[in-house]
Length: 391
Image (cartoon, rainbow, N blue to C red; front, side, top):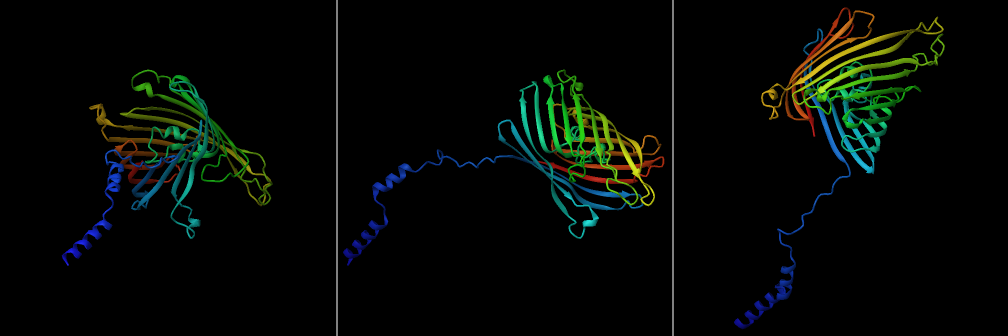
């Protein structure tokens, strides 16, 4: 009985255990943990970044100062790719709140649209301070707004010419950029629909714009090294408000003037950023009695905006070897819809920021618009807590 039991145990072990030679072969070919190749995640064929503008605000128009709300103002998601040599693509989506009250029954929340969507071909690719040039086609930057946003944080408020409707920051069209040798500046020229990125093309007329940015002291040292001087001009037209016959008023086929021009001067430094912008607009306004008049009366009006702004990081003056996160913001705008009248509006912004990094900050600020000398502009006072979060 003992012998039978021993034979059964030996048979089971012989079946269960692998041959000695096979076991040794598996041991010698097994990779050691410290020499094994680690699997790497595939690299995506594009670069991805984004930025969020969120805030809490308390205050509002005169006689209604207690309004308060949390708001997601904007969320930009940007994709960049280089599908071919010398050719790149950029797509920036814009998450925004639908504010058209006539569409509230359909949708009252946030929607997604395109802000930038263009292809760029670099036909002169100089290195360092050499000449460079490119062309773009698609939904792209207008002539000067993005330039000024390098000196004033868009997450706190749009720059004055954007905020007051001179034109939008993006539009559909074509553009060319020429970067001057030795870091002397650049030339940026555009041809766009003129209706902005939030609207389809509304007429057959186009806007032609150009900006010249000069940096005469770029190769020097000191604070003025970053001085940039940017004159710009936009020659535009729009269709008449009476492009189609309305009552007794006959259709008007002629274009109506829509020109803009300005000068922006800025200095950007880690410790102090300064910006000054003077801009003008020329628009034609039409009016007619559609029961009597055969053609509208047209009046040309000139408007003006003056904007001064600064960002100061005071603690860096005492320890400029360290990156101190505290920043002070100030801005003053004077808006005149008609330079031939005394009426104007003042817009002031003052704030204190804590900067987590170059693209992320938390800002407590106060924004006030005051009508003056009979201006019909809104009277508003609002306190904000702004979050700008980039990645």
